[in-house]
Amino acid sequence: MSEPEESISPDKSNPTSLSPQGRNESRPTDFIRDIIRRDIETNRFGGRVHTRFPPEPNGYLHIGHAKSIVLNFGIAEEFGGLCNLRFDDTNPEKEDIEYIESIKEDVRWLGYDWGDRLFHASDYFDQLYEYAIELIKKGKAYVDDLSPEELRQTRGTLTEPGIESPYRNRSVEENLDLFQRMRAGEFPEGSRTLRAKIDMKSPNLNMRDPVMYRIKYATHPHVGDKWCIYPMYDYTHCVSDSIEGITHSICTLEFEDHRPLYDWFLDELGIYHPQQIEFARLNLSYTVMSKRKLLQLVKEGYVAGWDDPRMPTISGLRRRGVPPQAIRNFCERIGVAKNDSVVDIALLEFCIREVLNKTAPRVMGVLNPLKVTLINYPEDQVEMMEALNNPEDASMGTRWVPFCRELYIDRDDFREEPPPKYYRLAPGREVRLRYAYFIKCEEVIKDENGEVIELRCTYDPNTRGGFAPDGRKVKATIHWVSARHALDAEVRLYDRLFTVPNPLGEDEEGDFLKYLNPNSLTILTNCKVEPSLGEAKPGDRFQLEREGYFCLDSKDSQPGHIVMNRTVTLKDTWAKIEASLKEA
Image (cartoon, rainbow, N blue to C red; front, side, top):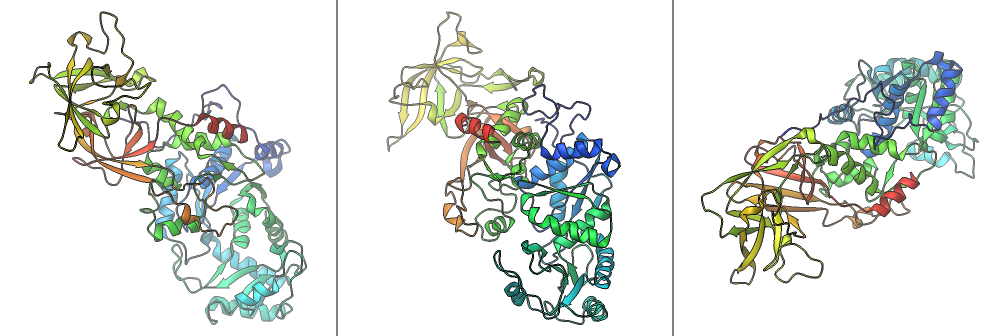
């Protein structure tokens, strides 16, 4: 079975090529793009646009990171600029090669290419060290002997100033000596730090002599055991931006209070100065976006790894069958804002359906099979019925589906005592089998427990293709598979991971685990699917008619053992979607 390309390359010649609904729109506009346009007009940065996506390799990327990826790489594409991929790898104890490789895979899958601009903050450790020496020589940094607990106690609060360290006024010579000995590994881990000398009375806590370096005896995944002192993120990030010639350092809103420190380091060092711009991060209902909490879900076994299809990670969404274009459309549709808000997950589901409806081939499958025997159909006869692969795209052509005397339909498509407005199969009632014939239920067979195990029906041979020459109508069309040709399949029905829109409530440290959805995964093991799925490859996406959008699981599905993940249902809540669109 064929499918769209796994990664996408937008048409750079067409400014509307990534429009979620194909509307004739101009390029997106927001306050970040407005700033960049002004900078280009005034020839700031020489008219260049150079962004970066700077993940910390301490976990897998999630849908929130996708917003930053789409924004940074997208802006570079729009303005004819460049975008770097840089790993801000300053904490070796939490970083791993596994995370680095997964991040590269995720960025590529979303359709972006960093070219030859793959960097690590650790590439600049030598330069960062030399810059730290410069700050010490200028009297702008000092070695502190306070313990981590003492540092916290002397930092002050939002209403009270911090307390200066008794080591703050060491001489330049003593600070240089101690810092060089820190690098040489002469002191125990955690016993000393290098701090910037700024203002312990500053109303901005980030400016109260922040730590620049700490002693840590840990092997680094990129540079090994070369260093035993590691720079802090705030110091590393701005200098890395400067070294790489970044023009617009686009960060999430929590770094707004860190911008004065970003500027301070660059101004004191007198080096090239990018502009930091902050935007609101993505918050999505019915999930959590904290790497720490996602790691907890993985480590404590609440999910089956970072790529569990219930996870909001990009690898989880990929395994679930979400197409990359849907994520890009979603990120563009919610836009860029300055204020935090929560986007309803229904909007993401809408974007997924929107893409899959146009691109996913249709197939038939029965999740809860009920046997149907056509008592007037020849026992040994097999017909091939022509079926559309996708009614939204005629270029996807048709396929042939086998039809014979014994079929499976979905148990939900039959009621022995049908309720009002139930138009599907019932005793004495006629329905249409999709692409095949009209059938009528003549007899219901039950087991010793009274459960329906078989329907005996008749078919009208004059209704091949699903149309009656005498003009009679039926009110329902149901799907089916040939019992003789059907393939067995395991189907995994995924639902939202949490039962409430905001599992954290008002407390980021709240017990979010109590809101885990016990029905977030339902496994069906007796499903039947049409034989064309025997040719499908892991990762292939399709629509099971009237059931939803699915993909073959990329890990567990293999020849002779079909495992399907439900990507999203066919139905959505339009009121929620419209509300999400207005809010976004």
